[in-house]
Length: 397
Image 1 (spheres, rainbow, N blue to C red):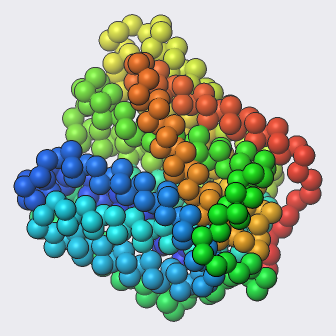
Image 2: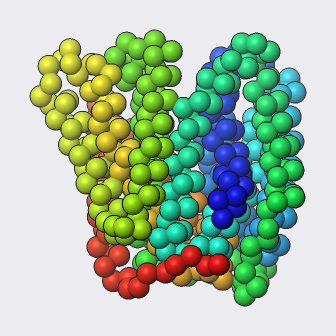
């Protein structure tokens, strides 16, 4: 099973690598293509938007044609998109390449999370989802540094050629080693199953637990969006110091996720949800108290921002695995569609929550604290709902 999870992880990594690897090269790309930095930066939002909405279409395809064929198609599209970016000569072509990669990641992400649901349930599924979500945090820690080194040595196009090479390696692994996991009783899908989506979204259990992930994603996106302004603009960190602080938090989330996955069998999913909500609340409270009571010179230090963030990110690590497994458990015969909805609500809902918080007339730290509070309340609601879910499901052999 460990080999199976590592294969799924190789698919999941296509998304964050596609976002984080080229971040340090944005100014060079803008110069190289004769564009503004704002246009190149907008490709990050476009990538995430396509990733969130496109899963609604990818889900039915995964259920209709199987996990492995859609994964292979997604990887090939990803490689084509990366090559287009590396060969771009105009901003329009570059933007198109990023949209194409976003479409590709829709496919591979749905396959990965459907695969977990196909093979596992209950605490085992929660551990698997936690492993995938937690390990992803090493990418924001290392990818910008790798992308910067590649660009410094070979130019801004080099990170995209790296993505082509990584895609080729994953293509070989998936083609030869990933088994087809679609259950035989999977419901056939024809066209876009709007009624099926509506039925699942009207399930209180699905919505309650999926919104936990949206709250956690909203917190993460708000933190990432505000971090450059707070840490470099206010706290005065250099770009290198910022990268170290940003990367250290990624490793911290990975460490907490590993710990949470190790103890979930002993304490259970409800306890993990409660722990996550408390940690999220603690992050919100300490961030607010720092703004309200710390002297001005201490408010502007990096740790006054990063310590509450680390606390809330630990809460995220406890919450997302259990919430995902609870949401998907009733949908064993339509896991592709349900997994697609989880991803879509998580990405689109988290982005909406983050944008709303940043649009409020509040200082950046208080905006982030507000999102942390929302994440806490959503997790508490899910913890209360888990009381009515009886029985413990085990791993499917």
